[in-house]
Amino acid sequence: MVYYAGNLRFHLAALEDELRKIQVFRRELPICYEVVTQTIEAWKQKLVEKGGVRECNPALLDDEMASDRPLLEEFMPLRDDVRGDDDRRERKNDTDSEEKNKTEWLRSAQLWNPFPDLNSRQDDDGDDDDDSPPVVPEKSSSSAAKATDAIASGSLHPELGRGIGNNASGKPLSNPSGSSSSGYVEGRMACKGVEKNQAGSSHRKQRRCWSPELHRQFLDALQDLGGPHVATPKQIKELMKVDGLTNDEIKSHLQKYRLHTRRSPVAQDDSTTAAPQLVVVGGIWVPQPDFAAASGSVSLPPRNKIYAPVATIRSRRLADVEPPKSPPAISSLAHTIRAA
DNA sequence: TTAGCAATAT
DNA sequence: CATATTGCTA
Image 1 (cartoon, helix red, strand yellow):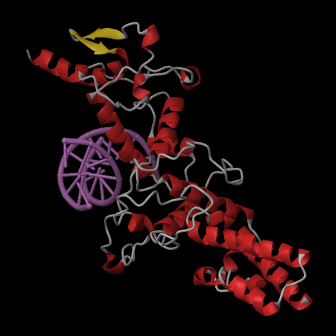
Image 2 (tube, rainbow, N blue to C red; image 1 turned 90 degrees about the vertical axis):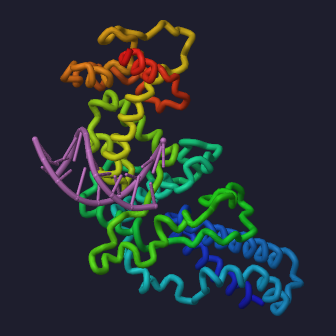
């Protein structure tokens, strides 16, 4: 009896150890995490029962536990040498920096989700539940960045497509309710063969979408930097502190964003003080925020100083900081007007 | 090396 | 058509 209890405790401890280890990958291995967590819970309960009521019969116990086991073992075969660590060389002496890097890219992984619209989770930028270690501004060495990128694009990766029923703990971590879970899930990670730079023609990256969260960070950075037209990709990247996000990606996003804001400059709500933010440019009325953008095409060359310096601009709410959700079509009007 | 733009791919 | 990636140039 004692043996079983001890055994159970031992396994429990081992499991908890494992849980701590995969904590970092919680987002990427939601099922794994969940399974382990639940198993731990279940076992704890067993332990309690065991302590309380003496009736426990070893065989019975095994049987009962069997219900929890198979699932678990699919993902995590139990070993006795769980703490062996031989196979987990990566985290031998918990190197803090490495840990941080991982969590950081994890954050990014979370943000880079392939379901732009679906993933509107309740919390928002909550940064959530998890006690993710403080993200230190730590300048990520380029090598580190590359490493993480490599990881992100290739290796570890949770097969989270399979619906395992018991996601008891609540929100589906990564895979929003099945709708349209078309092969995008594997998009970034599955990467079978891709990225294997075989024959050096793996070329095109997997297409990754900017999640609302990520975009929000982007916008924040933009705002801090004084607007889309003065912000530079690198600065943005540093400000966003999203690891695994490359300059090129930001550059691209910025490009698109600029084009977008140029086309449909939206005066952003706040109509309370809706003083017409209009200014005359080349004979046409243009919403002020777009002034800078428009100036480009109307020959007001250096648009650098149009925006206030970083510090002062912080509180301002510029239209160009927000993506045009519902374009008022002013610009198109402008075009037609100009044509006429 | 980076920013910006254009071409191209999804 | 919208958006992401790559290529090219300054």
